[in-house]
Length: 108
Image (tube, rainbow, N blue to C red):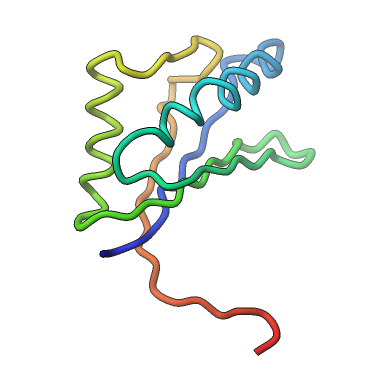
């Protein structure tokens, strides 16, 4: 079964709401997304000093990795995910699906 990642770039809706954005993402959104079919785990990364986007990396596994993302968008459209207006939606978050092709363990 193919494995990969879903890579997502997001930003808070305003600098004043950054703490609220991070609390919602870490406490609500990340667990809800990871509960969807095909999502195995999720991690978030914060920009260092340049005001760039926050990055979420979700590990996924499915016969068709694009189906995992389709399921995420369906859950959003059906209101199954608790969204926050602390998330910037203009422009929309960037989402990419990447299939795992190789690993190289350190020390070999």
